Image (cartoon, rainbow, N blue to C red; front, top):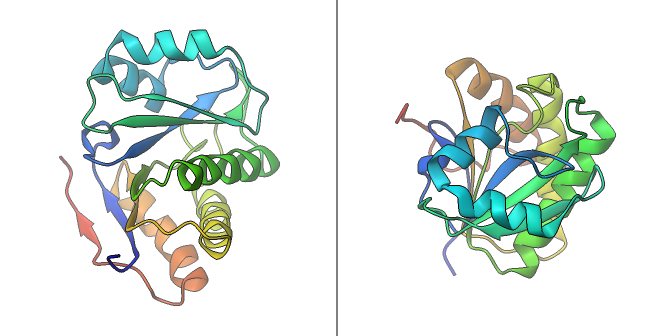
Length: 182
């Protein structure tokens, strides 16, 4: 198996050619604005149709659908907030733990993750990075063996906010960092 890579980059989450991308979701699984809206627009109606059929989940849970017309073959919906609500540290930790567990059970090799909860839901970037690094570290310790986990952020400021937590948690064990605003 290839060596594990953790990459922090700037780019378009909906353009990632991976096993799964992660959606910053609400618990009703309604693909409205922000990351979810971009996924709906780019991936087509089948993703929302699958979300609707799946039904609501609890805040802190995650659900999986197909990737529709995306390059990614699946979307893992991390429900870090209620519809119209805000993300909390507790809900982010629970939803990312559930997300990485789905990725492990599905044997996904490549996953792309946005800064869940930091847009519409208003969660601080640096705290999001710390929680995500901790959740990823736990998932890897618990036996998930992806070849690459890519954190795809919306700008350089977000990337700069993410890097310290990952460098601390993974002791500098990050793959080559790249910035491609595609």
